[in-house]
Amino acid sequence: MTDLNLKLQQKYDLLTQVLALTKQQTEFIEADDTDSLLTNIGQRQVFIDQLDAIHADIPDKAVLQNDPASLRLISEVTNLLNAIQEQDTSNEQAALRRMEALREQLKKTQQGRKTFGAYEASSINEVGGLYINSSK
Image 1 (cartoon, rainbow, N blue to C red):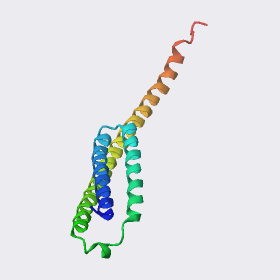
Image 2: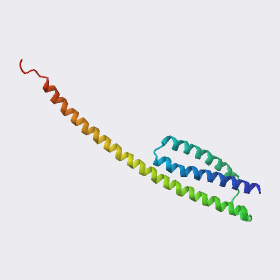
Image 3: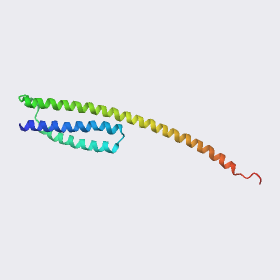
Image 4: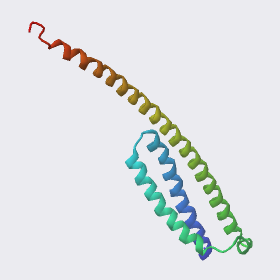
């Protein structure tokens, strides 16, 4: 295996790990597990940084067209990148749905506080009148 193919294989392996982490993000978003999601995003960023370093060493496609093994690896890498992009889009939509659900929950909570505050304010006036000694 040439040095170029070795780098392409490393890129493929890293992208496989990125895809696995990206798929896990959906579970964390739906479970509202922010800590695990942030840890996952950090791990994914480490792999992306490694990918950037490898990508800088890979020559242009024109140079690779003479090597069928390289072209096969490039095709597989492209397929993985497309799968990661689709999963990212799905995760973004799941996160937006989760945020909308949290917004609705916040609205209900705030409405409940306003209602409770109104009841509490009206009962304070009534309680004050109960303690007036009218015999004096």
